[in-house]
Length: 452
Image 1 (cartoon, rainbow, N blue to C red):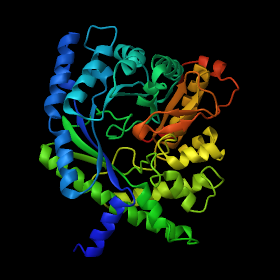
Image 2: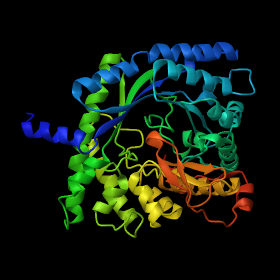
Image 3: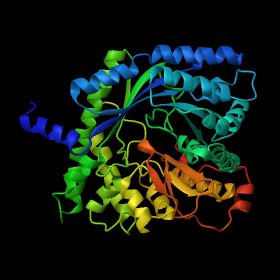
């Protein structure tokens, strides 16, 4: 039975503690859109997306109005374009990205993801064309997001692609230099990428997914922080139990929205992603949760342990609250999108090396980090390789969303705007990785991959 206390608590979570549903994402298969002619293929894509997602935004707004739950983003993910475009006789997939952008604008979503390739074990011709097309595609579009999965626990790490993605990031930064290298903010490089992730920029619609599906990502760092404010001096078991109970309540909101969206749109419900996703707004920060546990500043010794507790408790609480859990499901630590992380970088307590260590226990990895424009492609590739290794060896998702901003220097502040926020340019180890990255080939899968 719902009591008045339950209603008041939920209202406070939304109005004061910034609880929201971060995204309703409709996954759409494009496998039936393949065509050898590029013009026909692009028309098929545009027609299917605009037909399938015609009422997505309207439905999200109606649910938001009726239930009083803010739904910040409505998004679309599609089948990795490298797969469905391979039948086209073309040497560039930029026109496909432009068709995706046009369709996304027509239906009114915030982003569309899936300009993607899955190459952890090697390339096909379509993969090569797509990766070569990424810089121009992201420069020519506003809403298109791209991702490349180049490593997995089962396959190891495709070091040829690691080397190439360092160069792709540099080219993308250069082509969008007039917008603070914003193209790089729409590009994620993965190990163990989930195929049902509703969050951008890494969302794509996996090949094992149904024709259409509704996935929802919830958020509520401010709610968790508020729950911990009354626990000064409490032990860690008490902290974990409180976070679990709070995550349960947050996830129930997401489950409600997901089921309603699924019913109204006539599209199957897929998963609820339990990730705590911060914003640049004060009071909506993962870093501030960690500091509420007793750290002077995020990045201090103990930060990784605090994040591990948070991540685990969120998953345990959320699992009981949703019929299907998936995506990334944990705590995001994007520097530019988290007011507390930004403050910690400015204070000097949080470095790229500490963020890498935190990757071992969090949801993704080195996310939305601005670096100086003169950082070399091989150094960026070295950072990607390190993150991929953490994911492969620990059988978890890791990712890199690094932004080498042309002409920016360490200490400068780069503005991206909106949910992407702003970020101080962080220092990077200046010793060379060039000879290591130049070796190429594939780092073999670890022993733990042999699970059959």
